Image (tube, rainbow, N blue to C red; front, side, top):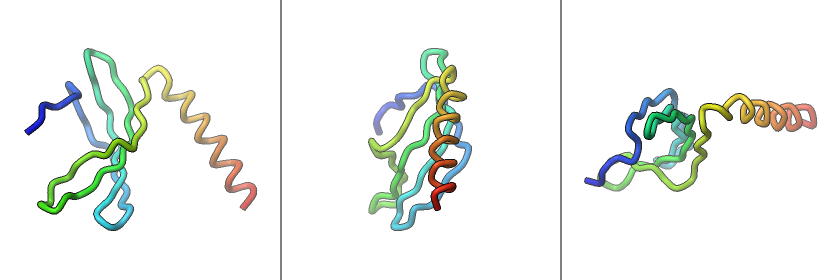
Length: 81
């Protein structure tokens, strides 16, 4: 089995996409630095959960700015709809 990249990992929530695929929100840590991560995962044929390359990792210091960007996107989409 491959060595883990992150020093610490804590899963917060998952959202099922269907077809054995899902998003996972986590707090991860590397070399004393914390990050927020949202990544797509899938279940392989053997039933093991595996991450994909599709994801976003944001440094702790930028998380509030990133939330503001998402809030802007959400407001724009739902105001138009």
